[in-house]
Every structure is written in structure tokens, then in C-alpha cells.
Length: 248
Ligand SMILES: Nc1ncnc2c1ncn2[C@@H]1O[C@H](COP(=O)(O)OP(=O)(O)OP(=O)(O)O)[C@@H](O)[C@H]1O
Ligand SMILES: [Mg+2]
Image (cartoon, rainbow, N blue to C red; front, side):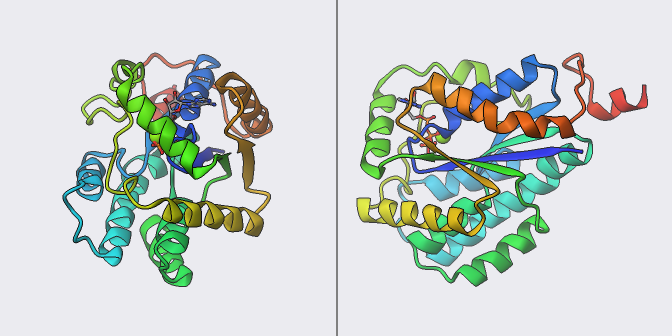
């Protein structure tokens, strides 16, 4: 059995911070685990990300935006998430399909049934086993992000090496086309996330993003721990794939 965990929340809520901590902790415990992000995580997906976040692309239609996010997601599921889950691993993903419903659905007023159909087409219906929601006030999240941009980054050198041959996936938080939208948009997105959680309360764990990084990491590990029983622990040399280990 495998395990698929996603992190959702507004900008600056701490998703990348907590995804990285969980990744390192599971890896240290000998679990087969990968960390990836949306949009991006693959060579093609990172190109699509550049188009999506470019501040110059003010003419992008909301439909184009949905399709680009979905195209990046389709590639990520096809190339990375699907194969790793089918080998019994744990996939941690920094944002996934729920972001489409919250941002393009509730934020940009796209029809939710259309988004569901496009997302199902892109992912083959793959849904997370667990989604961690980091709940933060929209203004505070954007302020955290502004501050982080003016501070030196501690994430880039380590995480850039996670996916060899792929573009670096985590650096300084970027200030992008999507962040630059007005505050009321981010507040609609937050309301959207809350509605999504009400629909599927068993899949979501809502956490107060104002807690300290350490307290949140503990709460997240408590939420993940019961699900770890469904994953086989391996202690692999770093250059050995899961399928190699399974054959041995
Ligand atoms: N619990 C916390 N308390 C205070 N600051 C935090 C906390 N978690 C993260 N931060 C800081 O807030 C900033 C944003 O964190 P992070 O990049 O993890 O958020 P994010 O949700 O991934 O943002 P984005 O949506 O922009 O990718 C960083 O400077 C980070 O160090
Ligand atoms: Mg992030």
C-alpha cells in the first residue's frame, strides 16, 4: 500500500516549510518518500509553472489558467506521483487538485463541476489519502511571504538537490502573478478551502498556521502516524529504486 499526502493553504501559510520537515522526518525513519510540488515537480511542469507565475502574463484567461494547472498536474501524476505510489511509496505534494477548486473555482468563479471533470481527466481520479490544511489569515500569509523574500533563503541549497536532473524546486518564496491578486480574491479562496473541508472532513486535517513551526510539525506527524502502517519501511541506499529493492 502507498500513501499520498497533500499540503494546502493560502500563500505564506507554511506548506513548503511543513512538507520539507515531514519529508525529512519520514526519510530519517526509513520510509520510501518523495516530496514534490504543484504546479511543477517535473521538467515539463516547471516550464508550465514559469508561464503561470510570470507577472507579465496579465492577459491570461481564467480558462487558460485552469488548463495549464491541469496540464502540469497530468504530467506530475503520470511521471512521478502515479509510478511512486504504485511502488508502495509515500508521496508528499505541496498543493494539488484542491488548489484548483479553491483558487480557480471559488477564487475566479469557474464552475466547480467543470473543474472536477477537467481534474479527473488530468489525474485519472487520483485523490490524496490525507490533506493537511494550514489555516492562516490571508493578509498575514502574504505579509510572511513579503518578509521571507527580503531574508536570505535557507531552503534552496538543500532542496535543490532533491530531484537530480530537474530544476531546483524550492528557493526563496517567489512573488508571482497569482500572489499579486487583490486581498478579496485570497479571502474568497480561503472561504473556498473551508467549504471543501466541510464536504470531505475525513480526508482533511485543519491546522492553525499561527502555531510555531515545531508545534505544527508535531501535529502533522500525529496525523500521519496512523497511516504509516500501510507503508512498508525500506532502508535504501540513495541510488537504489524501490523496484530494485522489491526484487531483492
Ligand atoms: N508556523 C510558522 N510561524 C511563523 N512563520 C512561519 C511558519 N511557517 C512558516 N513560516 C515562515 O513563513 C514564510 C512562508 O512559509 P512557506 O514558504 O513555508 O509558506 P508556503 O505556504 O509554502 O507559501 P507559498 O504559498 O507562497 O508557497 C517563510 O518565511 C517561513 O519561514
Ligand atoms: Mg511554498
